[in-house]
View 1 (cartoon, one colour):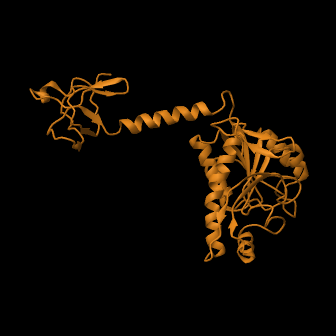
View 2: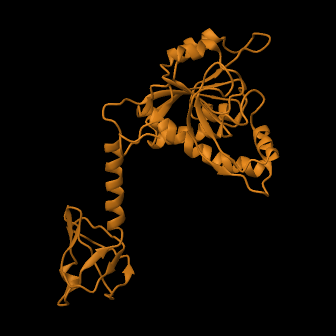
View 3: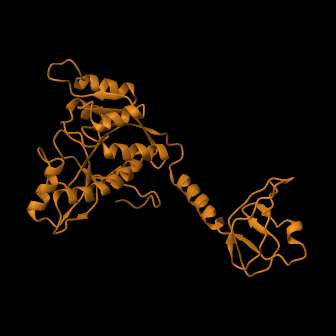
Length: 307
């Protein structure tokens, strides 16, 4: 497209938005521009050429016109192309199920990343033991099916372990992500999804983990112990609380003035970052297992590097 940039009030090295003429015979593109001291007639923007109108240029010697957003645009396009190249070709989106018991901030963070495309996956089901929790409400608002597990004591609502496995298979779930789910995962589910269930815990496992260590109780225990560091751990799930193979951790300092709430907020911020990075690697098939059974994450930039 031959678009022309109309300029008035020439000033050296000034930044302005060119006025739009009332009537144009050709398409017009107005861009924030700045003058340089060099004198040339044409502005090159990607594959398009722009020049000042002969009418406004008159007999003046037209300086070089440089768009201030050209570098940012090129960098954005370059980064987008590089990100696409980094993803393994031919890898289909992974179907995910997330388990929550509360507000589900990690669930929301991962869902947003899936929608934006930074995680090559799709959340197709939410499982919860509290159908009125914040995570379940968010899922319903996003048209994500909500499943209740386990069954209530009277047996009127909820799924049995076998029914849960069947339901997840009907949704074609490939990976299960625990994000603040406070019930023990049934053996039936672990056997149905070997090396495919992840959990996030708010301490550096194996410290401050196991039955009874959840939520604010973890952060209170960390501060009471005098530990100088804490942080989230992502691990694969086995038949016990917080004992599966560790996949990723992030270190967070414990400050001398920290309350449990202060530490919880600092750890949660890192949880969101870490869980998204790990789920992205999972969906791009970059999780590899060492001979001794330790899981590693393959670098997207350098396939020979693992962490």
